[in-house]
Image 1 (cartoon, rainbow, N blue to C red):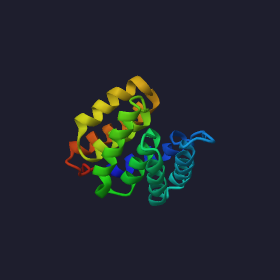
Image 2 (cartoon, one colour; image 1 turned 90 degrees about the vertical axis):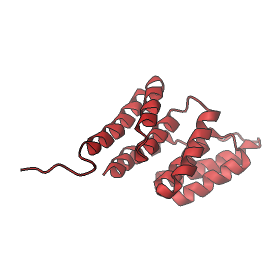
Image 3 (tube, rainbow, N blue to C red; image 1 turned 120 degrees about the horizontal axis):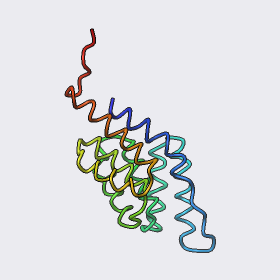
Image 4 (tube, rainbow, N blue to C red; image 1 turned 135 degrees about the horizontal axis):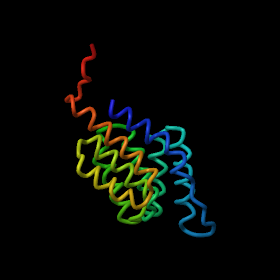
Length: 160
């Protein structure tokens, strides 16, 4: 249930938050941004494995493209729990490169929630409140959904 809520809230927002970047023509970064933008298109289409390949291609050309790290992390996370460790590494790198990248705090907070690391999710929420209140509200809904599930140990209460 929590995963479904997290995917619904965060997957729907990806199209707006993963807008393509302007392509800097005639620069070495051009190839990286073209691959990144192709990855964004695939991400919006929910073709996460294909998007992953494009973001990895972009990072092979320009490892300092924070948005590519963020969207690679998202693509990995959306493919399952087996990718959570790699996803976390890319969210962390995105934030190392661009400490005000609100989307990375949002999605890393969702990842922490999925992993049951609520203190870390709340810390990302607190930082997000200073960057983007709308995204902070989305993360709060994911965190609150996890808290509601925990009240009953992951089991829904019986109704009469």
